[in-house]
Length: 108
Length: 125
Image 1 (cartoon, rainbow over the protein chains, first blue to last red):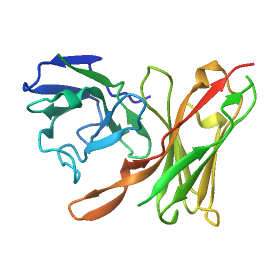
Image 2: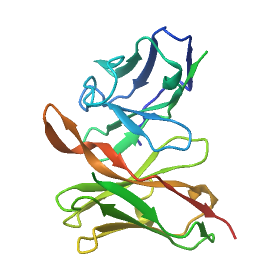
Image 3: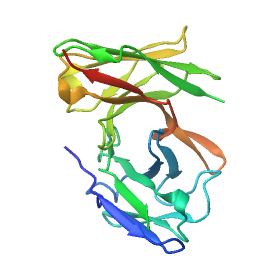
Image 4: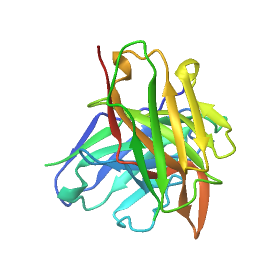
């Protein structure tokens, strides 16, 4: 089955830049989406189509893509950004959705 | 605005069938894909499958043999049945709408823009 691979954890100090990667063989063909999930809450979409930001999401959130890896970048990290982040995409057919294992962002 | 609410038993016995319903309020269920996603405690998200309002379905291949989804447009509801459950099926179950707003228009697939609050289902005797 198709998998997306994320690092389990990333730690940064406030004001620094956090980068979270997500790797998958079908990513050159399928867009990636990123979600932020805080404890006890449902996930929230923060990036769509690799690099676009939904309305209401702060500008410090951005995304990029290169080959089989997509990256979520959070510039000027704030304490409120501490959360789990999940990438999501689809298999090469586009039919079956898949999530990465999630990355816990810790703000030191 | 559109809101989703999951409902169903919080405790299911092993080997029995888990049944959940998602009620859509504040908007129509028609002309969208609707998904079920689950998350075991302390673990990641797993897409279970989706249903279109016509009744067309796509299921995660790893769960396909045990999953059935249905939709009732008259009640603005869609449902999940997962058979032969084990402790490994213990999780928070979310319903979600497929789609997102981008570049000034709504794209009714690919991502999940609206989620229910989630409901905890425990499989135990």
